[in-house]
Length: 402
Ligand SMILES: Nc1nc2c(ncn2[C@@H]2O[C@H](COP(=O)(O)OP(=O)(O)OP(=O)(O)O)[C@@H](O)[C@H]2O)c(=O)[nH]1
Ligand SMILES: [Mg+2]
Image (cartoon, rainbow, N blue to C red; front, side):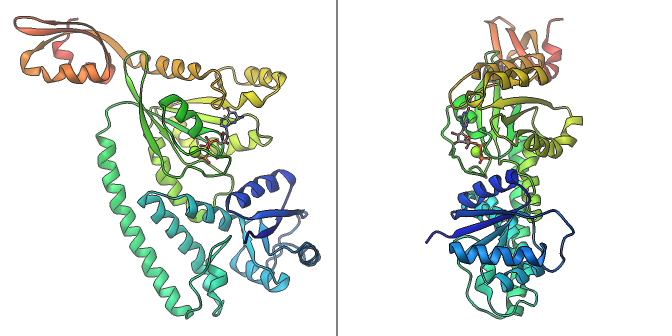
């Protein structure tokens, strides 16, 4: 049976996002309540008057779940549950639930399980026997009753083992990464911005897209050929979100490693979202360190099909270097290709090569990776006129005609 939830948060905007999160996790939101941002009560987070108000409202409308937008300490969560007598969870738990549901690869499954265990561990303390209440957020069932100490030790052991597994996976991924020869363009952005939709349109893939949060958890990569003749790898990654549970930050970092290695970052923004500015800030904060690196960041405003013309014109004035597209409706997608092409072209150089036959292996590599204008098999060597990535050209410098 679908759970009926009362959402508790600071303001309308935050509650709207929480509602989408809760619905993505499979529960129904039947009431939203706000509280005043006063001093935080160490025992209940909110004031006792508010606790009573929530209890009464929940009883009246028959809710069986309370979701707080802020993170609750284990003690606060327990006290609230005892007082309201309904299951109380926080935003972090909801996000963990969604991640658990959407993880597919071995790596992301391990990362999510690790995060869940780390979230659960402090909540075991002094809790007694009722383990089933602890294990689950929305729609999940706990492991049943078992002894606290045994559980704690088992969880600690498991955490250790999962961390070891992750180290292994990470090492093998680094090998894969060092084998990559094409430049990398990473699609990043707040969750639900339309990253997977754009990826599908540009690279003809069929990634899962949905009006849900965190539809994508595993990054996918596709090769795309640019007009200039160079291939580029596009990667679609997990979305960003405000107030990510700290247990998930580590796993998020791993995904971001992909981004750190990118040559170009396409920052996709849902221009139709009323919280657009705030969401952009969340992403900007995360990628701040990358800006100093040798990487170009392009802002791409998506979902312009939902914008009023005046709003779109304003955005164009504020962000003169940005792109404005609709991934879903296929509007202006060419501007993305052109931009990638332009940036990559800057990294390319035209050369004339006289390759000795002993170096003939290069011919195929060059064909795969660059644009060849002329190719002649001569008596002593192979003549090639081609547009090459500067890095490749440097390697072939001694065969190049000046
Ligand atoms: N109207 C409109 N909707 C769009 C556009 N692009 C994407 N969407 C919709 O926005 C929703 C989210 O799209 P996704 O591509 O799944 O977004 P995402 O950024 O990959 O999201 P996560 O993987 O959850 O982080 C889907 O319902 C899409 O159909 C657009 O240009 N216009
Ligand atoms: Mg996606």
